[in-house]
Length: 228
Image (cartoon, rainbow, N blue to C red; front, side, top):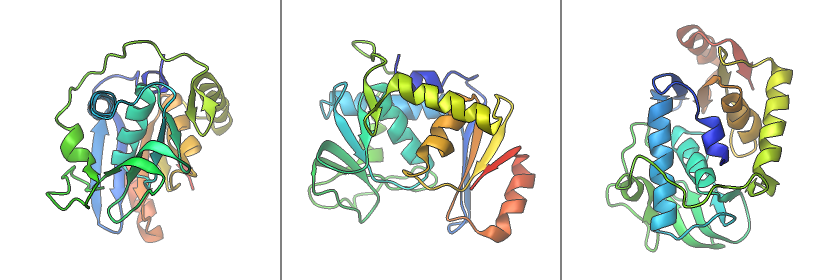
């Protein structure tokens, strides 16, 4: 079973990721079902359009954002290994970003409401949201992803899950936890995303965090834990 299937097993209607961007003054909430749909669209696009197969490297060079979560979960679902450097068949970058070692560069708009680049696509690049949204909301892998398949920076699926479970226990996270995190990605992905989801908890991710607003976010979201 892929890492994504292990991380998205909660009740479909339950809030999974609530994303704040304090610089843009935006808030978006995604349920388990919505996040699963975006992950499936991403996985289908990677497999059907870009020929990604289990074990292929996918570079994710994006900040903490709900779109980044969709990219990560989609890549893991189809068995890809997420990396942050080095040669790769596919790389996801923010607007203005580059990935010279990638065969294909996909630009994620990072628009809070999921708008695509609306035609403003750099020459030779792909518009991730515009392309991926056309694919199916369910992903059916042709073969299961073995537990020894590298999925994150060389670490295989089973080892990532074991580390996440141990870390969740250390942090005291449970399915009832609602975790506010200001950790940036990719450096904070293990604690700030994988561990939270592995515990069955929900995540309130704050990007470009304004310290003056954090108490307000905690109160509004009724968070139980903080990762900074």
